[in-house]
Amino acid sequence: MAKLLDKQRYKCAMGAMQTVQAIDRAIPVLHSGPGCAQKLSDSIGSSGYFSPNIFPCTSINEKDVVFGGMEKLHSTIENALKVIDADLYIVLTGCIPEIVGDDTEEVVSEFADSEKPVLFASTAGFKGNNYIGHELVIDAIIDQYLEKSEDRQKGLVNIWADVPYQDLFWLGNIRELEKLLKELGLTPNTIFGYQRGIDNVNKIPNAEFNLLVSPWVSVGNMKKMEKKLGIPYLHYPTLPIGAFETSKFLREVGKFAGVEKNKVEAIINEQEKYYYYLIERYADMFLETRVMAKQFSVVADAQYTLGITKFLVNDLGLVPAKQFVADDTPKQFRKQIREEFENLNYGIKAEVSFETDGYKIHNEIKAHDYHGYPLILGSYYEKEVTEKMFGHYLNIFWPVQDKVVLDDFYVGYTGGIRLIEDIYSVAAQRWN
Amino acid sequence: MAYKIAIASSDEIHIDETFGAAKLFHIFEINDGKYEKVEERFANENNQESQCGVSGGCSREGCHSAVSSGCNGNEGNSKKVQLIADCRCVICKKIGFQIQKQLERKAITVFDVSCTVNQALEKILFYYGKIDKCQSLRGAGSKKTVTDAEPV
Image 1 (cartoon, chains in turn green, orange):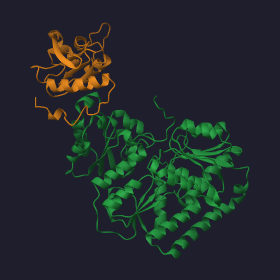
Image 2 (cartoon, one colour; image 1 turned 135 degrees about the horizontal axis):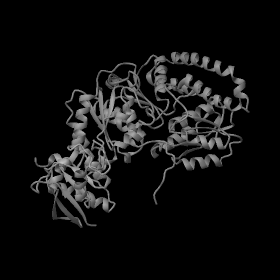
Image 3 (tube, helix red, strand yellow; image 1 turned 120 degrees about the vertical axis):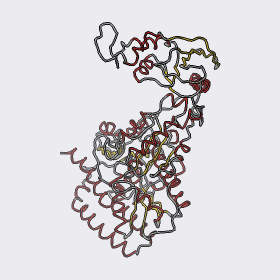
Image 4 (cartoon, one colour; image 1 turned 90 degrees about the vertical axis):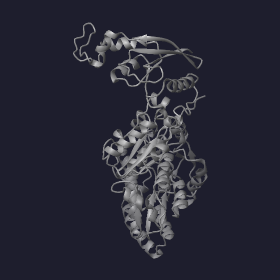
């Protein structure tokens, strides 16, 4: 019997066109049917230097399935190089050319001598979701573009985080992570977002180490860079939201980078002082049990479910109900992520479910006794079910319908405060 | 399942005729994955001039449009479409956008390719053979593309 997946919270691997789009002046060249990009472009926005609605695409049809679409791909790349002023061209393949066996690698190799780099990533939908697609694009950059460098810059750190655009707060988050590293006296290097383009990609091999802030996405990329470019990496699995986790994050990064302990502690002390000054001013609101729900659930990808669960328990002292990781986390990472959920302050353990089916998630939410109205942080899909349970609902994850986020963020000390503001605004609107 | 394929070719070896210029279509019948030429169908010479909007007028009764594109009244095109209406697909060198749309409305697929008749038939038979049996198209386009074909 056919298996149906209800309300999935990710796209196919070719959703990696978002990852390419996030690199300034890089453009995806799509070898796919004309509908793929249209379907995948919804959360990217529809304008900008390159609009996702006008990406070069081979728009393959029945004829190309029968006779092969390599000729069309060749002319599409050739003309994209002529008419589009980009710094980096990444060819992404959809399911159809992969199934019928178009040799994309061969076509792309014909452009090895072109003025601008042309890379390719095989992002057929059956290879996985857009989290895997994101890894495939970064793999393509490592494999086909980057070269090992002997010239290492002391203190230069490549930061890698979760998937741009899939993560609603990607831009603000990565800037805030940069800011935190700068505080430690390190030089951050990221390839995504405003004014971070090919120059930053070129700097990757010169870094002292890679910093990965994600439960599982890009772990493979880090290993690949370690092997090919000889860059060691620090894997920090929890998105640091709020004072407790951010201080822990700074200590760990500081230790790995060899930053003097006193310096790290001084930074933490200064940041925490302001953080707790803000918390203290509203302490009566946080302690008033009637304002906030007693128990909460997060339905998001691994990074947000884990990051927010830790924040709400460790910083705000809320009690976790069941948490849902809905990004189809590969099995080999699940045990380690589950352990993170069991390692909360005050000896609290959160039960976590790796579930991709929205129907099953909603049934579990409905069946759970939240001891009053629940607090649900999730995607737009959770709005209706939360409303039926008279709960507090905040949209923090894709798909997003009731929120516009330009560069807001939840990372760091400031990010924690932003999340508190958002959650308590929901409660305040409810009661007033 | 038997079906027919229309081919526009001047010498029956190469696909070298555009749909509009083709004076005749070679009709192949496919049975159990084997193909056989069954007939030649000649396009009416008189209608050649009224193709692709050359004549400008729309000849459908009651239609006074001076523009033929997008109007179903262009008799020349329709007649040629009707000529091969019982075929599953048509193979030709090139085809105009409007006439392709007319064929698509009759669920006739157009393959505009430059290769030999045998190469084209081989690929199309493989394709239809697979999809008719709901089998995977793995390797359908394959690494051999039309660029590998002999120059026409």
